[in-house]
Length: 383
Image 1 (spheres, rainbow, N blue to C red):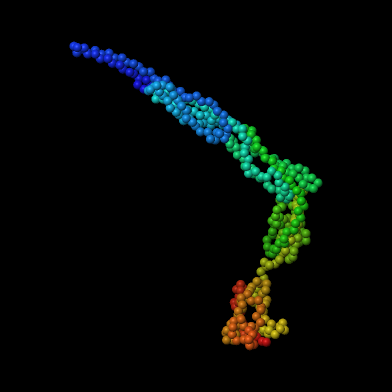
Image 2: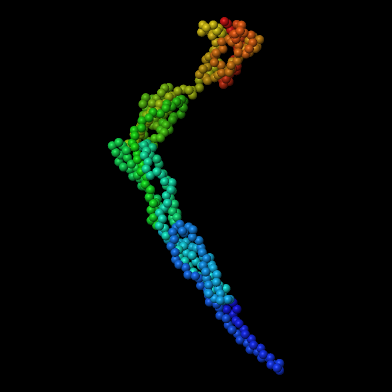
């Protein structure tokens, strides 16, 4: 038999002296052992923090039987969560089916109570003082809540009437409410100092052929970008916020920005220098002048070998001077009109000085960046 019952058979046998045998049999029916029951459990109330760490537990079952009639062991519970709108309920169930097919159950109710307000982080300073033109944007506050993944946030901003000096106070209030009406609040006070900002920015250089520019791009640190610009010198190039250099004469012009915010008086002036540096002038060797005579005698006439005429074209000159035997006596990159007849390469000179003998010399001028062919010719050196 087992814990589910069975039978016990008892037999008697007797054989007498004559060899005769007699028998008797008794059948004993064994009833099933009593079904087991689970240990008692009590309902619980826990916080959201405790719920986060709550795990299923083992529960004992037994029928307190003896020997083969003992039914005993443990079962691990299963957990189910139910949202109640404020907190939630955890149900822990235990189920056991014995060898006889009999099922027993036990259930425990764990109520999760939310009494903790939402937790705020990434908080700004509680009180700040700023100038009227530099009021910071509304900061973002981070909120977490152990029982509510969607905490309600309400933001309210109030502003006092400016005093006689133009100062006023902005009060920023954040209110965070979870599903159980637990509330966290944060308040920031912004003391705003009215200050009449009057500045002049460094001058700005633009070319007469440049495209129009938005003058608002020069308003660094000005919160109000809805003010107005005035053309102080009546240049004729201002249209709204844009200045067009192509319609004005070369020169310097002042423009002044005035804010539209009554609580913050901002005046900024900028100077724009309109030039023609970007204008490409036609350059030709027809405009080029190269010295034919050098007489370095102190009379300021023909004292140096000079190359002129293309100064506005941005070119530089590489110069070589050779004597009549083809020996180079002078060489210079980025020539500066400074050769007066001396020998910088070694060779025959007059006495112990570096002055070259009078005579005819040969020059090679390369105009760097022009695309022109090298220019050659003769120059007479006198004393």
